[in-house]
Image (cartoon, rainbow, N blue to C red):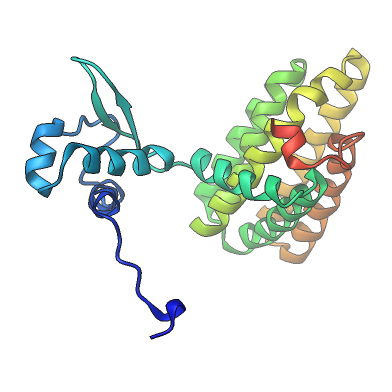
Length: 251
């Protein structure tokens, strides 16, 4: 049998990690749940302490548990999150020398498609949620930083209302990568009050228009408008940074 045809037998620590991972993902172990003591788990799985800790290290690297050493230590469960996925995706993009402009382009394409899907699929409850966030944006027009965070919530809500969980996860991952690299630098560049008011007003008007297009079920118009808006905003956010790699921006 050729070497490449041989089946790799998982290590005992990986098997332990796989079993605990399955319990976490299936919801049998909730957020913050303390795992049994090492002695109990060693007996349950029939493994040694080094093997059990190897399994723990696998789960720690995946962000599914955290381990504290000492008399009052132990392992506690953490549910899978978009932050964890974004860190892994960001590491791969960093390794490949991906530019932030590349990441933003992908995010803009997915978000604009989501706007079209939202226009096609929404119901009255969805419109109510969009209008509620719009109202909070209105209240924050004089607070540039606060508006940015509510505006981000609005963008992610448009994606959420498509009902497509995969799309929501992908956009959320890209959003975390882009925002962690641009929000602070954007705030630093846009410091003049009149410039802040102009940019906030522009974003708010765009949000109002996309809700109108969604309400009227103008699918193609909503997608095209949102792409134009995101492209224009992207040029501002990526000013002086689009030639840098994600690694440079997230380090």
